[in-house]
Image 1 (cartoon, rainbow, N blue to C red):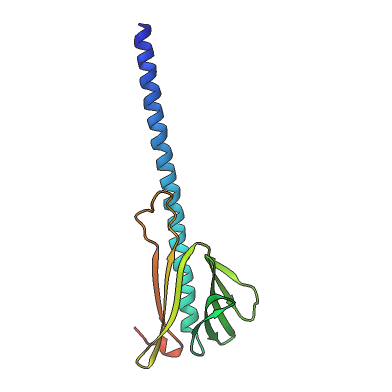
Image 2: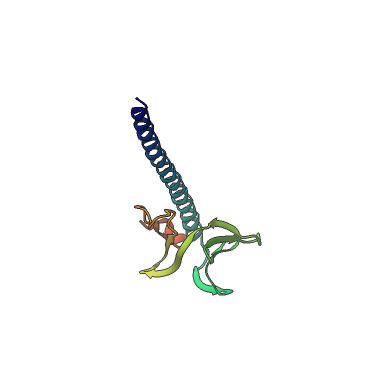
Length: 158
């Protein structure tokens, strides 16, 4: 009788241990999924802001290096908007406000460029975020491409 109780207790501890491990793995996966969806949402918001800035440009946007960091300048009616990548942070500064707004904080790579296409200037932004999964990445590869036509000609481009 005592031997049976010890066997049942051992089985109970093993099953409880396995259940606890499964619970915590599910919990971590759920948290990683939430962080990834937040990243996607913030990236789409940043992309839409960038596209609006490009469409409202009053001149030709330009890529350049500012203080050793890649920057994309967009001349606008109220002043210039500058997107810069500082380390892993994507920042936006909209004149006349001298403060920079951090749009994204886990950017692996970002490239904004101007591509002439016929009589229209097309701006393209390709961005990759750092993956959030701890163990060898997840199924979500956080790559984004945004495109917009610059200036008044962009209102009619499809």
